[in-house]
Length: 150
Image (cartoon, rainbow, N blue to C red; front, side, top):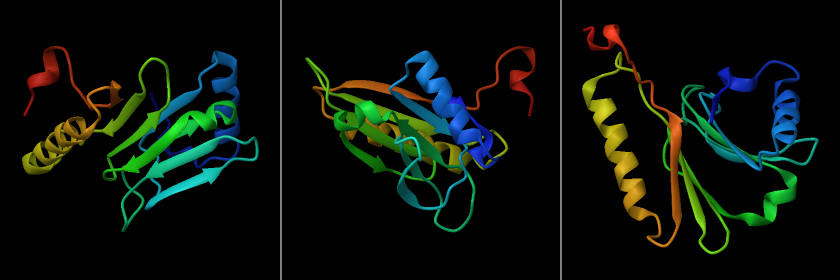
């Protein structure tokens, strides 16, 4: 999982594709991509991008990038919200479901934060019990002595 600050600068997607190849990552989850709507895109290098964002503005957003060599493994990608999406991969002996999440910061209303975690739980409950489940993302957690500041 990477927080890539939108990937809007020229060459950022290509750099990310290079790093995926270098580290032999088949799939990568991203946060804060700030894309509108749900969509799929194919890069010039043949990688598939799946993203889920807000309908009304370029905020939040999560994305998966899938290597072209592993595209056949994708059983489906499902947008849940502008902060949560899932991708299901065929694997042996069990399929894999990855939940990509981008939590609101503590600056957001308590209700929004609670709604987010309820949506993560609901998404977990809907995943096949036979799948290996990976939950990853940017949880905007604070640790250390200053973590309890109000």
